[in-house]
Length: 218
Image 1 (cartoon, rainbow, N blue to C red):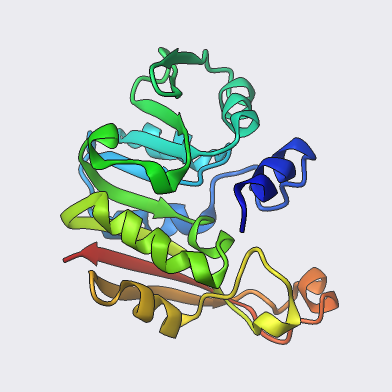
Image 2 (cartoon, helix red, strand yellow):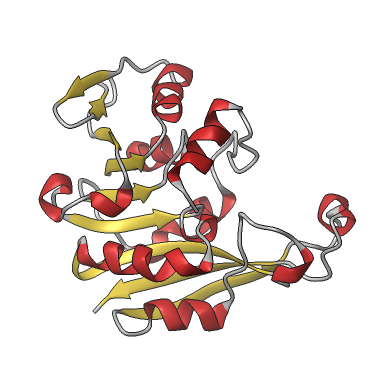
């Protein structure tokens, strides 16, 4: 999937993937990572997610990575945060010390640009990528992390032929295939989100699970 696809989505305000509130899975399961305040959390393909503010309020240093400048500007503007810039398209706010957003292609980032990352929150990055890009994404992510770093990952399990992505189907076998050599994998919760969701049923889906995973870098 080309970069221009996502740039166009933001330009045209086709951002149905954006949640206007903090994600419920994040609130429920973040404590499973047992992360100390003051440690840095990476949010890849972050958009303008309010989840970054919630993580910051817990005392974490938060680093987002986002390709679209529209999304980066919207994050700071909609949360009434002054947006300053330092070199290499890194934006930060003096009011919310500890939040910074790299306007960058995630796949080009090097560890020294980010500092030590102790945890990753991925609600909408892996599932936004087609099959041929997911292995590259996981390899890039693993290269940014040291042993013991953890990931809170949210995936969706549904019959791919019944609905076009993104978000794409990433089932448990796919999670194990992608992460198994470099991470310890723990399924925290699996939820049936089709029941009572008429919108998904109208799209022809017969099954939709949201699954929350804790991954630990080996």
